[in-house]
Amino acid sequence: MLFASIPLLSISCCRSSQSEKFSVPVQHNWLFEAGRPAVLRAELGDADSTALEIETVLILDRSLMSEVKDTVLTTSQKVRANSGYTKIRLGRLEPGFYQVNISYTNESGEKQSLDPFNIGCSPEKIVSEKTAKADFDEFWANTLAELATVPMDLQMTLMPENSDSCRNVYRVEYKSLGGVTVGGIYAEPVAEGTYPALVEYMGYGADVYPYHGVDNPETIQFLVSVRDQGIFRDEQQRWIDRGLASKEDFYYRGAFCDAVRAVDFIASREKTDQSRIFGWGESQGGALTWIAASLDHRFRAIAPAVPFLSDYEDYAKIVWWPMWEVFETIEKEGLDKAEVLDMMTYFDVMNFTEKIECPVKMGFGLQDPVCPPHTNFAGYNNVRTEKTWNVYPLCGHGIWQVSEWAEERNRWFKTFESEN
Image 1 (tube, helix red, strand yellow):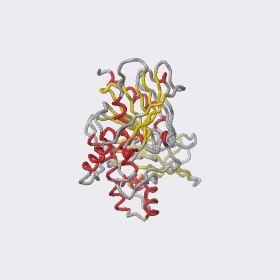
Image 2: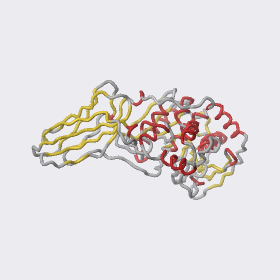
Image 3: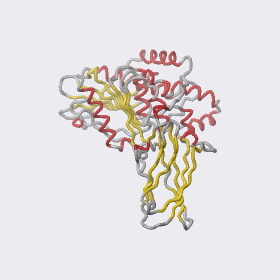
Image 4: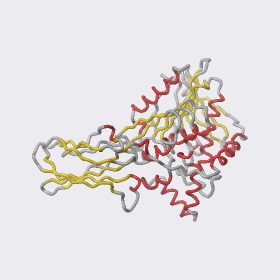
């Protein structure tokens, strides 16, 4: 077994839209192809012959936070409840993601609604224009040069309660940008030799879950804690709105450097097989995976899932959090909104990912209300290397609850192990 799967903090998962009258089961992963008719199949479950009036409203996801929604389609159709099924025709859709709202009224005038759910169309054809400024590369080259001047000053403390004859587990601390102490939980096989190494980036404010030696006896694992999170988490549970006044002070300048410094650490270990360093993470961990692989090319392959921090402009059009916390702080501190949004382009994941040089597998939940699929693909579609994605159509943000994703990711990583 190459890598074990450890669940993260649960946020949300989605169930199928259904009622006693009818359901809309998943077909073709609720993903359609641009230029071809998109059709949903509604299954009717009532045994009587009541007539149903079904209304379907299709809304473009990038208008969900607007007062006036971009309604792509409104249809109404009458069916008999005992007719087995009916087709809901959505027409030919443009590449993107959409919210489906279905309600039905019976002959008695009783109206019920299904929970809204998302569908998609040709996600790899969605275009999110990069917003990087002319000095984007220079800014990050200078930042990484500054990071390189900071001695690691490594400290490793054995965690005997988690260690065994297979692996030793340590609490690790070292210095990153600005001399800030960061690190994480590190597990290393006791036996001599070199081993594949997995760098695992944590979600936004996620709880730490120490490794155990016996979990993965022939694998190096490193659970990364960036500044003020993980094993260093402070009482203030908001990070995205810290340091908005300048790109030099923005929280993620340091956190992105912490993601790179984690690779420095793992590559410095004698037992690390330098040709088999892998990275993965979910939510913020997915974003940090993207960033680390964009700024540091020592990864053999990466698997970000439901990645955070991409396409800030569209993010605010689809869901409330996190951008409205940014807007709240802008108002509270008297900052200029346009200037802050310009500053944040230096930290927008979609402006980094074309620099990735290793293979990528991305996982996403079609019903994600935290890191919506449109923002996932904003970064993915700029990747120029070998890439693939896995969709979980009923999953919200809690992709770590989906065992199939962990199994698929681990199988995929193992293919690179077999190359050696």
